[in-house]
Image (cartoon, rainbow, N blue to C red; front, side, top):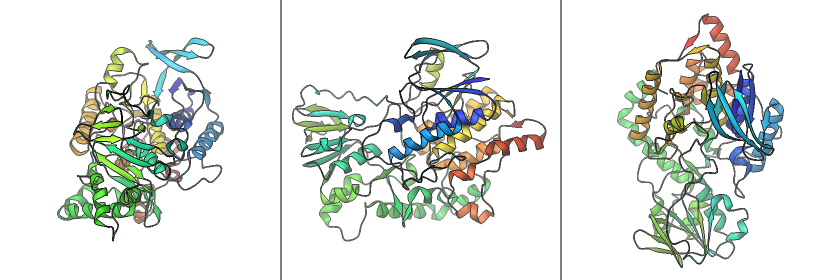
Length: 501
């Protein structure tokens, strides 16, 4: 059939190349004039949090070997090469304005440089991602009174704008701590304002990229999840008495590796870091941002001043917090992340379903909504293996579309999604895209998706390697062939497993 993919970021590329291998005619529509999604326009100095071994398509290596944590330019070059390598039909500056349901699929109204056009498709894949241009928009009053400059993070195009200024960065995600760190050697003073402290993940642990450490099953096997294998559940049951101490030790190691905790620091340095000390355990946080190597040392040295508090308003001299403190600044950078994703092109009833929750609507298997026909979602299962996760979701959708994977009734799928949503809300702090991520539970999630496809979740042999060796994207190559072999051996369609995911 003809399939439309909305979005030309890493997930849209994964969806198009994967579903194309199922024999479908796939067209990618991208509203921007360039592909690569969030990587098309980034602030200076940004690097990928995952390592190059995790962040790639399973069947296409980096043509030129990039840095271990690639730069934005290296990622853009790779994605551009991937589009050419897979021979994808990509329509740039084509914004999908509306979807109208038809008897056989969807009629898309598309805004193009040559005007508005309409095209029919049998299926639509939404790959617009979590980090669209729609930033969370605070309603802080007093902007007209502020004598300085206010920028959103995506407007920061030249780090020299920090030079010799009093800078306040609002937020504590990756972008915020990156920009605060970049500002510290340039600005007269740097203030970092945030509501709640959160865990910042070290970029390296014992000399290895942290994401490579996290990529081993040993990093997730003792984490309670919405679905655990019998082996994991038994291990957690047997080790329950020592798990609190174990995770406390993991937290202490992470604090040391990130630069938060270091022996020999003065009392004044420890006091400067205190506002950044997260109150909960490391497993309470669903998604973690990487701490730039210089962030915590700059705080300890007083070059970055952290302020825990709620922004109330702008005043003439800077930012006023709810507790009455005023942070003097002449440049304020708002880096509080994105709002919950919206889907303005969907028909009103379906859009209401997708935008009903502040943390995102939980999809079945993170790939489809049981009440929205002929629509799939690729990229709404974010983790350090984001590209592989998109490939797996697209393969799963391909199996469903060709009838090789039979799904439960809609009510049962909704019940499964609700249980996953409730688990996340009970165990993980709030995030505007909490429902659209699998984060550090990716091994459990991948295992369920591959079980649906009749493919082993364990990708390494012998078992000792599968347990201790770091996974890489290439370990998930060949999924379509393995699914087809499993279906042929069975002789009948596979059935979606009765597991929560």
